[in-house]
Amino acid sequence: MSLISRKMAGVLAILLTVSACSSSGGKAAEEGAGGVSAGKANTPNITVAMVTHAAPGDTFWDIIRKGAETAAAKDNVTLKYSSDPTSANQANLIQSAIDSKVDGLAVTLPDPPALMPVVKKAIAAGIPVVAFNAGITSFEGSGILDYFGSDETVAGQTAGERAKADGAKHVLCVVQEQGQVQLEARCEGVQQGFGGQYDKIYVNGRDLPSVQSTISAKLQQDTTIDLVVTLGAPYALAAIQSVSSAGSKAKVATFDFNPQIPPQIQSGALQWAIDQQPFLQGYEAIDAIWLYKVNGNVLGGGKATLTGPYLVDKSNVDFVAKFAAAGTR
Image (cartoon, rainbow, N blue to C red; front, side, top):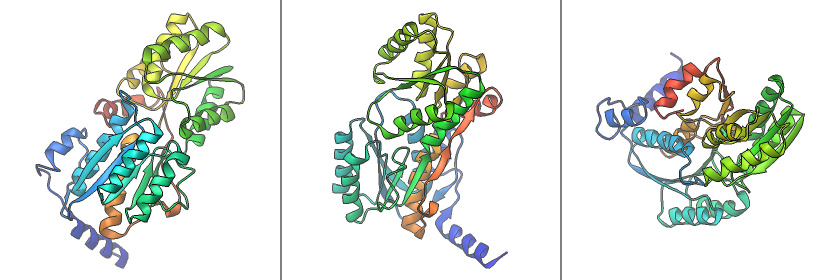
């Protein structure tokens, strides 16, 4: 064993005590995370706030939270989770976390101009900050330690290239929330990767019946649209219904994943999904703060640590489906 390997083994031995039956981080945490478990740290308890822009009812965020809770159980972290889709309210939640003197802060940055000022207050207060999911272009050089997520422009290009390879002629990109940089980057990437006829519409993502009717109206208005690309799993399910109600021959594909997506791919109702692996984002955000606090580690070398894109279609959906059913994909 090399000197580096021996040192790392020593660090891990100090940091971790593996206990498969621990009441706070063993069997119960394992069951809650779909069988994902990695023991329990014997390091001092720390409190970490996670503040996201999750909208009520969006199941995507359940997966992120499950990842965060799994890491918290392993790392002896008290997790304080809060969310609000409105930037001003999210900023207030971050300020509340600063005021409560948390040991670490994990945040999403869908609206950097509105959120970076309060994030910089946290950094100035000596609170280590990690970003994830949204804000990949804003974290470098900001004092934020790490970023975990998908490069949404690259993910969009992947989707656009797949649409082109599938023979689509006219793509409609459906955005469920205005003003969020990561959603705009996805659609821009789709347009770049596709290179053909392209449209974009905005829908009210907090009202799924409205999402369905808006997409239906667009398909009835323009019958040349042959592929609808949504930016979240719940909206993909709505789009499938929209295609049916509009009498359209358009196909549907999506970004993001939840337990309802694999059966739709298996049946052919959904062509494919671009998965950014949100469980990893939540897990790594908490774990990164713990590693920084107990061992001074910083991941990524100042660059984002990517969790996607990972394309799921009929060729690999059966493998991924079991993890989606457990709520971790």
